[in-house]
Length: 125
Image 1 (cartoon, rainbow, N blue to C red):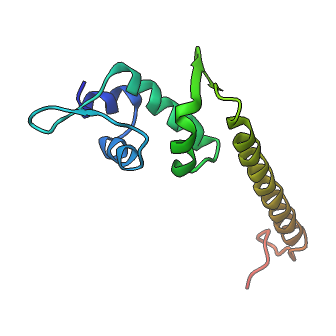
Image 2: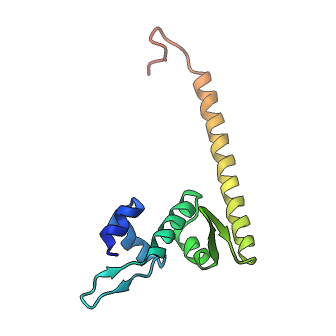
Image 3: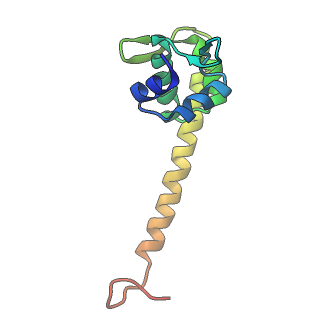
């Protein structure tokens, strides 16, 4: 299938697929005329990449992880035991980021709670 069809089926822009190729996440074949040709498995790769990006991983990390990832139905699974250390490290990094964001939100909540109300509901500056 050509890039437009893969983009449509994956629900992404063709430009994003070209970016994934630049990052080493997709490796389409090329026709004699230079057009990209994708196979059905590339659709799964795009979905896996989107899942890992949504989990907070960088494209560089995903490029390292993809060769050791598989699918169990719709669920993405690590198929190489040595991959678990990297995944634990990424999860710990995300947990630290979540903790920092929660602390920032608590600080903002304290500022909001300490605001001096006016007739309109908020203090004016």
